[in-house]
Length: 209
Length: 209
DNA sequence: GTTTTTCTGTACCGTACGGTACGGTTCGGT
DNA sequence: ACCGAACCGTACCGTACGGTACAGAAAAAC
Image 1 (tube, each protein chain N blue to C red):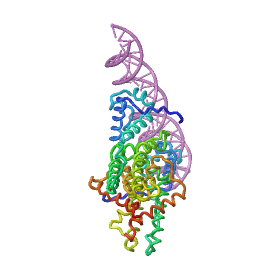
Image 2 (image 1 turned 45 degrees about the horizontal axis):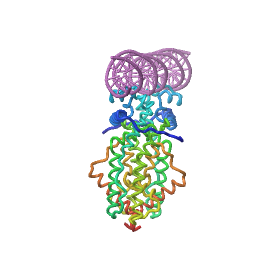
Image 3 (image 1 turned 30 degrees about the horizontal axis):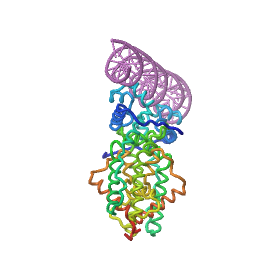
Image 4 (image 1 turned 30 degrees about the vertical axis):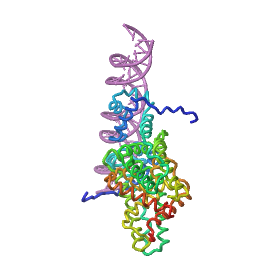
């Protein structure tokens, strides 16, 4: 755990293979993600898969890592912004979050990581957590802090505030979708949900507190 | 879907087998839940398993159904209660919810259902949803409605309010734990989290709104 | 006590999958 | 033109698991 050269970079070819594998995963679940199927779909040999990724677990980890590395940086902290700017940024965060967690790719990856959670110490969940959720979390937490220093928000612990915001936005949608329930409805509903969540958040953490 | 004779009742023996199977599931994940292992642990033959439950999917469904049937009714709607009584009831709901979702059994069952979500139309997720989450949801929604009629709360849509309460209570704890992250901390933190969530909820939906 | 049903334990079958071996091919380097 | 590395395709191996068959014990029926 001390010195990890940690070569998370793959060849273009390997990345393409991982993308193909992810495609398979999305449309067939984990059971469809056999080494043979991946090799066939990606047009490579099983031997190459094992040479590149070690074993099946390594392959799964690579898939998750690769996708997690794709998360876009998102909007900047915005040097000086208005109160409405903050609200807009929060609403965009909420919209993005809802869109992301209801996406096929996100659902497939989360299902995969959750399925592996009990066995095998590869820790896909940790990868998802660190590369995906935590990163966007840190970003938004910084945004909240900014809102605090600008006097728009009043919170003692930005971490805590972020957690609350997350809860207000996601509610039980994520677990519902993971369990296979009907996907989040139209973009209209999504927009409305985002607005409602942010309104409630500001009601809790707004400056008039 | 119209007429479901639906014989969810099993022999005592069969129930014992299902409990043993659940035990296996909890401590080993789905991969440990082989028919042979269940038969060995429960002291019955594989043939009996197939006779009683059809096939493996039927067995899994039976496990989930059985456990879902165990959810305790919880506190009554409480005929006439004080405002503090409402708050106490809400806090108890929050505590119970956090305790439940962080329990080994709940995590194992949710992981199982999520893992099966992509394939096989057995719909374990639907069973969990209907028997577990929805039931307690309806109950608490009724509680919120009561709070409204008593004038303690001010909400247009109790369903919506319940959803918000859920989000405030659970935040991202559930998905974090499903992904394998460290379990919820001490009972002290749990109590504090419940109180905070209810306080925020009342701030949003309290009568002074 | 005999018969019939239900159960256990074990052995068995087919299949699917993870992982490996190997011959043949492509391709860049020199 | 030649060499060697990387790679493809396929065949192969071992194993694990879902599901079935069967023989004998237990127990219930009569």
